[in-house]
Amino acid sequence: MTQAQDILRAPEADYSHSLGVSASPTATFHSPLSSFSGVFSQRGQPKQLKPFNTQDIKILLLENVNQSGRDILTGQGYQVEFHTSSLPEDQLIEKIRDVHVVGIRSKTKLNEKVLREAKNLLVIGCFCIGTNQVDLEYAAEHGIAVFNSPFANSRSVAELVIGEIITLARQLGDRSNEMHRGTWNKVSSKCWEIRGKTLGIVGYGHIGSQLSVLAEAMGMNVIYYDVVSLMALGTARQIPKLEDFLSEADFVTLHVPELPETKNMISAKQLGQMKNGSYLINASRGTVVDIPALINAMRIGKIAGAALDVYPGEPRANGDYFNNSLNGWEEDLRSLNNIILTPHIGGSTEEAQRAIGVEVSDALVRYINQGITLGSVNMPEVNLRSLTLEEPDHARVIYIHNNIPGVLRQVNEILGNHNVDKQISDSRGDFAYLMADVSDVQISDLKEIHDSLEALGSRIMTRVLY
Ligand SMILES: NC(=O)C1=CN([C@@H]2O[C@H](COP(=O)(O)OP(=O)(O)OC[C@H]3O[C@@H](n4cnc5c(N)ncnc54)[C@H](O)[C@@H]3O)[C@@H](O)[C@H]2O)C=CC1
Ligand SMILES: O=C(O)CCC(=O)C(=O)O
Image (tube, rainbow, N blue to C red; front, side, top):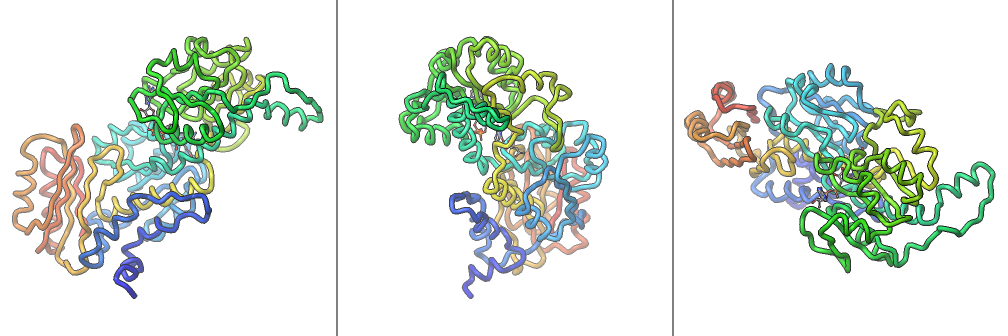
């Protein structure tokens, strides 16, 4: 057996999941982080670290996180409680009090009210791209790291949008509904090829740029609007002003995050600036489109069709919920022609969910077991080579603290009685993350190190792994 094989077999080195995540011939996603275990285990077998003061890691997994992710977490011996949907707020609060880790997708709102109750929480895993459902600032202030999967479902969203462009151009939804009702209605009026038409992409990030390539391959012209100046792929063109952009596109598709600046970004005024008979697609977040304004624009024939995957209010679970009790305009939307309404399924493919399950669970394991924050969306990104089995009297000290002068001196005074083998510290805004590997420590020293760090005024959270 080669040394590399040996390392992969060791129970501690189980980031090897990332290497063979997909059974699909087309899913080529591999987490870039999957290579780190190899890099950092070169000097010996990595040692399985244990938290000094959180012996049994308890995880609450909501919203049907994929089996791939559940397997990784249960494989670590953590206690995993799994739910297929999100929970009502009162139940969420009850459960979050007890757990060290919570895993969610887009539905569960981890706002200040909920996080205030989460006294043991170390880390949140968003098994999706968007992190708008989490109060990231509050989490950082309380030493709770947040991880997501920044691009594992981008391709799935881009493919959905491609399908919708053709579906809208050919009024496929309406024809299919008519046939389901027994009506044969063969028409070509206002049905178009997409070849030569202009696709306008708002937000040219992971999804928007992927979509750009696919659309061009189908003969579309691509323009995009983004707040950042970005390199165009193929023959796509960035248009600096939203108004000019909207007046040029036959199809407008939205791929921006939920932010105060993107709220109602497409409203009556912007719909008025779009071409007569153009189409609108929103698979970003429900708040980006003023839906009553869209309903009006479709009723007067300004907009010839729309596809919506996301809504300002979305239900917690599957069921007969798409009625006026959610947002008040569902019945109006349902009555329109040539509108595709989908239940937030942009990223819902086997490939994407498997890859996300692996990527986020691997990040959680790295954080819980080793304190590594690579890929965190609210903490400085910090990494140190793993401790190895050849270093028995070592411990890893993690000190999350307010970013104020003089902290390193105080920490190193506390660690000074031991040999600090390696240390790293980085900050992100008001918060800083320090990780130090110390040798010559006995179990009896750990409590003293932990308690001394906890007593410092700058302290947000202390973890000692040994
Ligand atoms: N329907 C679904 O199931 C899914 C929805 N999403 C949503 O799609 C969004 C976009 O995803 P990615 O492409 O991965 O994000 P990204 O972060 O890679 O790209 C977003 C782009 O939007 C741009 N942007 C931000 N504010 C803007 C503004 N005010 N005007 C114009 N451009 C602006 C950014 O500069 C960036 O280039 C996510 O934030 C998420 O909310 C993501 C995955 C699945
Ligand atoms: O799959 C989900 O639940 C959420 C998908 C999404 O919107 C995201 O990844 O941001």
